[in-house]
Image 1 (cartoon, rainbow, N blue to C red):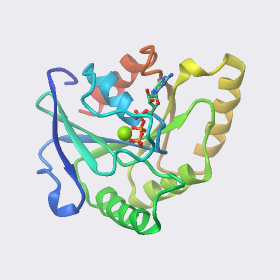
Image 2 (cartoon, helix red, strand yellow):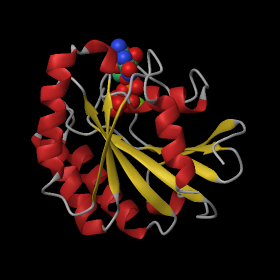
Image 3 (cartoon, rainbow, N blue to C red):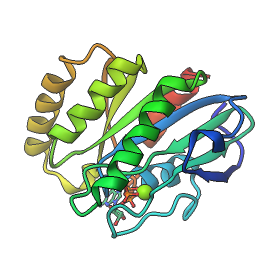
Length: 195
Ligand code: GTP
Ligand code: MG
């Protein structure tokens, strides 16, 4: 169950470094700065577990965290960072493809989308990759505290439209704020249901 302490296990830069696939795993993908690390901190209730920062592109490795004895939470490097060198982007894309297609215990990917901005073309690319890797993914809107209700509803409609094109998309969208705690219990329950 989604209970018990969380610990950082390791940061991985190559498939050979992956920890043993001995428990259920969910991963968090999204553009740089969308709030992946903050969401993991909120879910685990452990401030500073996954490092969150104002500097986009800070998390460069695939970071594995345990949540209790039965679950890995996986923080993927942010994509769409304009200043990233092409070589870094290519290396990352290769690793991501290998990880998504080769990880038997990966139950679901959460694709984080900023509640102010909606789905961008880079997000659509990741969703295509998830489709082709046959990894079910679910959209999580982040930073809900930063958006007005009317704008949020527009973004929700845009995200729904974008998801409709992806066979691997799970239709339910989760609205969250790591800052205020909105949606965190819902997301925990969703992850629990995968165990
Ligand atoms: P990379 O590791 O660079 O890909 O970024 P990330 O997706 O892990 O984002 P991170 O969690 O580091 O958050 C980026 C910035 O957004 C930080 O300054 C966070 O404090 C802020 N942030 C994250 N979640 C929220 C939220 O729910 N509300 C608000 N207001 N700010 C948030
Ligand atoms: Mg991060």
